[in-house]
Length: 239
Image (cartoon, rainbow, N blue to C red; front, side):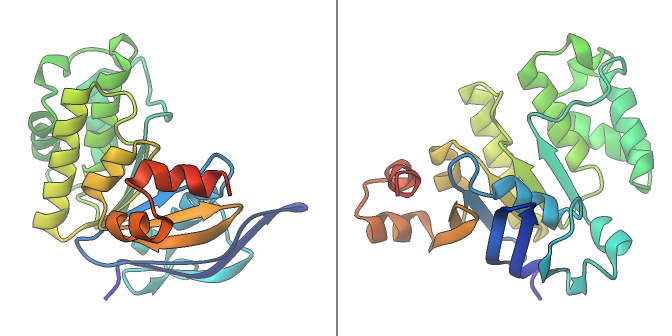
């Protein structure tokens, strides 16, 4: 059974067609990248997958359930993290994680929060307010929050954008390991091509609301006659 199956999605905003005829499937344990230049339709696609906006046509199934008919049950098994999303700055790290653990109805919330604090090495920061943290530290809190409910689908928008190279490398390794061990799936957007090459099993390139190419990093490089994924990105972005 596919974790995510999106079929022929269409989304318009007035006279602008942000996404058209997009189909995408993600299997258990699979990490899929969604790439493209700014304005390609990536964020609109993610928002449809997360139930934040409704497609004008097409369908989205999560865990075999139609999202439109089983919204609460399906989205309870999903989570999201993005470097640009702010959490309540006046709260301390542990308070934020405690609040979200209860919001997600996590069993044994205190134990789960302790596990996430250890996993993301947040112990020294647990009593500090979020507003006092660096952008990289807040990114780690965002990822810890996103894993509290052990999601079967994790949607990540620029997940390591604010991390230094060492922290980013360790987080990428951790996320990849969790996907393999737990059979969970990830959908990632990123402008870090090395990150995508390392983490993603398959990649979908979007341009002007359409998926123009899909495959592994090696397959895409071969198709475009490119040395690496960054060169593929440039060729897609420049038409």
